[in-house]
Structures are given as structure tokens and as C-alpha cells.
Length: 464
Image 1 (tube, rainbow, N blue to C red):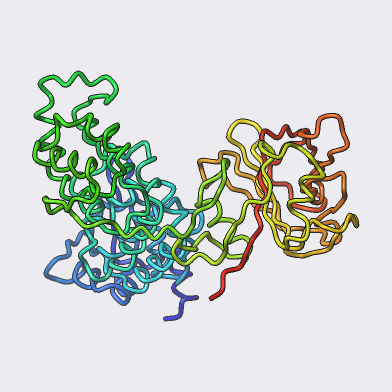
Image 2: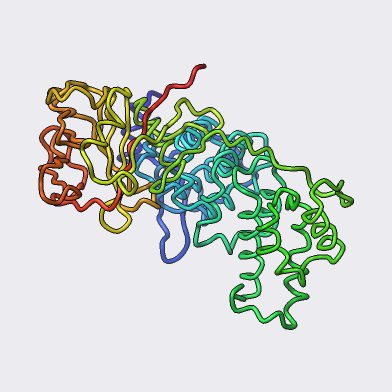
């Protein structure tokens, strides 16, 4: 039977021979289905509708699936009948639950398709809800079929552990999963930050605030919780100042021999360590950028936008560009002369401005700022807007619409692009204007802009 014929049956459900009750009270849906179509696509349904398993009522097979939501089951049915599926508008957690349901129902083509989607869009999906997403996949990570997905998400976490640590649900992370993560050698973060976040997690298990801790009878409980994680912390990787200010002050909850050893090690750095602790992590910190406004992950987005990729999928260890700071207004002032002195004839640049609250705006000029020649033409420039600089999901991007008015170069102007006016001859040079929507798409940049600080970076393509 063709997909076209199956699609008609999906819509009408004529001549159905089975009923599946999906979901739990009060959200149960009765689905009329055709066993021949379901059995052709799924070994699970072959067994479910066999004489050894199935229940019958009035000549119809009866099946209950309380652990799959009606919404997700309908997506699965549409795939089985019609070969069609659309995942882009589903929240990441729903896509994962859909994957688990497809695995339970043993629909291999659907499993492969969902996994490819989750891997391709891994960073954006993980940012939605990192703790819940990891905990959903965690029970399945040893299964061969899910190894690529698990490893992809672990790589994202290791590239930027702050995704994990900055989540408001971090303190609810399962202990076994946290231990597994901390054992890894490739966490891309300073060891002292790992230690501080581990302490935050441990204290939260006892509902204690670290700053209000009185070192009372709960020391033993904290020590017990912390004990299993100690072998995973690379204490020798912590600098002396941080050790004495942030580790030694918690000596009551650490083994005495460890404190003694570390104290001697930091007093006499050339002394050979006596205690066998975990080896140093492999911190190949290649993406180090001088910025007061943004984090390395912003530049991963910029690189993806420059290369017109659909999602920010560059890894720090395989990053294609260097970003060199040319100009910072908080240091150099809102000064057109210095802007051009520092930024002209440097080739492609990207600029970032902090405006109201935590909002960031900016743009990419693939040409240069030199020449005092007015408008320059390009099809590759763009403007961007993070309404919340800490939340990458708020990013909006607009590639140039009118290539003839992409970039403006003039001695009295800063990084002027299309409808974004950065004139310095006005009385308040940090007051910019956005006239909206003609040269670039409207992406939520406000009309009247007060710039608190902005930075310009030269973009240098790395040699392969």
C-alpha cells in the first residue's frame, strides 16, 4: 500500500481493526488504527497484536499505552502512516520523549531520524533544559543505539560546563550523573570553578547556604556527600590563592591528609605530590578572547553566522577563527577618530554593544571600515540582537536585505550599518538610532539606543 493510500487511512481511520488508548487520566485519547500498517513498520506492534499478547473486544484489538502522551503518539502514527514528521517546532524535551517512545515501539527509521535531528541541533536543544535532557538520556547511555547522541551531549557540556553549572536545576542533578561527568578529563573550565559548583551542589543536598554555614553538626553529612567526588577533583590544578581562599577554608569537610598534602604542595610547589589524585584535565583552551561584554560561546554563534550555518555547531577545539580586540569604548572612548585609527584596513570585523539591561546588539562587516567613502556593498553582512546576553535562545539574526546599503564608512561614524546610525558628530556620541527594517530585517533592536560599552574584533581565519 502506498503512503498516499495510508495517508487517507490516517485521516479517516476507516475500517480500523484496533483501538489504542494513549496517555493517562485525565488526558487519554482513543486512537483507531490498522494493525497491518503498524505491524509492517514495527516489530513491537507485530508482537502486541499477536494472538499471544493482544486483547480483543467486539472483534477489535485493544492496546493501552499510558506512558506515551497523545500528542507524541499522534506524531508517531503520522510517521507510520504517511512517512511525514516535523520536529523543528517541538520543544527539545518533547523530541527526546518522542525518541524514547520510538525506541519502545521499535520503529528504527524514526529512531534514526530523531537522533540525527537531536545531534544536528544539539547545542540549542541542550540549552533549553540541560539537566532534564541529560537525565532523560542517562539511563540509556550504555546502549549502543544511543551512544552517538550521549557522546554528542557530553561533548557540548565539556565544551562549556557553565551550561550545566549555571542551570537553576543544577542542584537537582542526580549524584551518579554528576560523578560520571566530573570524572571526565576534558572539562573546559578552571578546576576551582568545578570545585565551587560541586560545593554548591553538596550543600544544596542538605538545604544549607554556603555563606550561612555555621560548621555545626551537619559537617559529617556534608563530608559524606562530598567524599565520593573527591577522587574526581584535580586539586593540583587549583592555583595557590584559590586553594587557600576557596578550598582550605572548607578543611572541616575534607580528609585531613588531603588538606595537609595540598597545603605543603602550595607552600613548596616543586615538591613531588605524595597522594595519588586524578591526573590534570586536558584543558586545551584555544578559544580565549579578550572581552568585557561576551563569553566564548557568543563567538561560536558569530562564527556559525559568518559561515551561514543553520545552528551554532562549532567546537572550541576546532574553531575556525581568531577574534582580536581592536577597540573598546570604555577604554578608548566614544571617539570616531580612535575607532577608525584602530579598526580601519583590518579586514572583516564584528562589533558588539551592550545597551539597556543585559541586551547586546552588534553586526558583522565582512569588508573593512576604511576609506571615508560612504556606503559599501556586500551580501554577507548581518546585524544581531541578544535581548538577554546570558540566554542564547534570545538571539535574533538579520542578514542584509539591501546590499548597496550594507556598511557605511565615514570619518564621523562608528560601526554604522544600514538602518543603524552610529554618528559621532552629535552631542552625545553614545546615543545611537535604529530606523528599522529597510536595509536589514527588523530583529527587535530599539529605535533609541544608549550604548554603555562596545567592542570591535578583527576576524582572522585560521590556517587549516
